[in-house]
Length: 136
Image 1: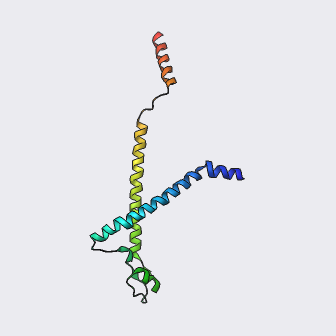
Image 2: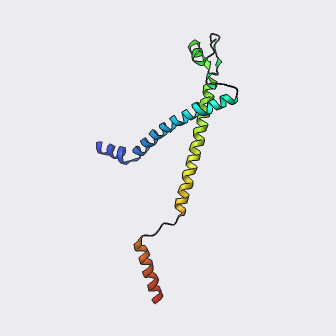
Image 3: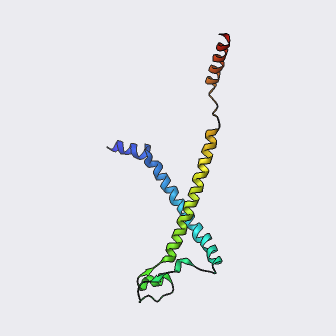
């Protein structure tokens, strides 16, 4: 049983999946920083300094705070600004992954389009075949 598990974990796709998840998490951190530190400030500057993360709708009359953190302490709020930020984050991640996958597919198609150089033995056998065909 232990041997089967080792074969699965090391030789199977589990290892590839683990590497993909780790790289994906690191890539997610990069994209989160890209959205939070670059795109959202630019959008905020274009829209006159709006910070979407603090936009909310109070769902309780007890909520009187101006910031989302304080409002959540006072009662229920609908944090639509945070949702908008996460949605923008998702769209950027999807667009970057789409571009990356397209780039990799184009690269693979270029690699497949190049004719593979046959091994030396095949070249020699082809030459021998052609010589024998000429003699016949």
